[in-house]
Image (cartoon, rainbow, N blue to C red; front, side, top):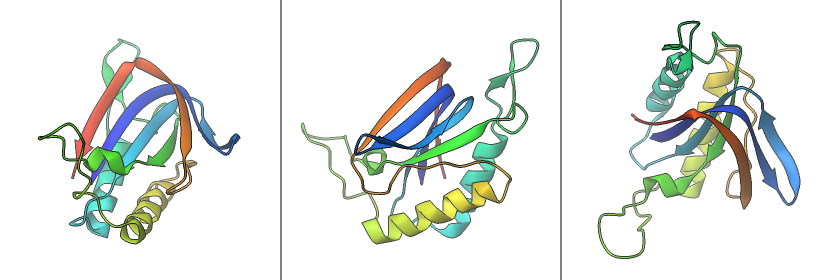
Amino acid sequence: MIALIQRVTQASVEVNSEIVGEIQQGLLVFLAIEPSDTQEKAKRLSERIAGYRIFEDDSGKMNLNVKQIGGDILVVSQFTLAADTTRGMRPSFTNAATPAFSDELYQYFCQQLREQNFRVPTGVFRADMKVRLLNDGPATFQLTI
C-alpha cells in the first residue's frame, strides 16, 4: 500500500466538471493498492497518516498532525503510484491490485480515517478525475506499508 500525502491549504477533485470532494487545510492523500495489501495494512496506514506530524507548530517546526490543526483528509485512488518504472519507456502496472480488490480496500481505508473522526471526502474510484491543490510548503511525503 502506497500513500503519497501532500500538506495542502486547499484541494479538490472533479469528475465530469463537477466537484465531488474538496477540503481546505489538511492532507491530500493519493492511494495505491497492491495485491499483497490487507485490511490490517490499510488500518495501520490510516493511523500513520492521521498521526504524521508534518504541520508547523508556533516555532515553525513540523510537530503537529492533521487532527491537531483541525484539518480534513481528501483521499484519491491512484493506481499509477504502484507502477514499475525501473525499465523501458513505459510504466508497467502489474504491481497494482485488481480494480475490485483495490476499491474494497480503498473504501476500507477511508472508513478507518472516518472512524478517527476525520471528514474524508474522496474522488470517484476508477473515474477520470481532475485534482486541484495548493500544496503548503511544498510538503509531500510517500508512506509505504
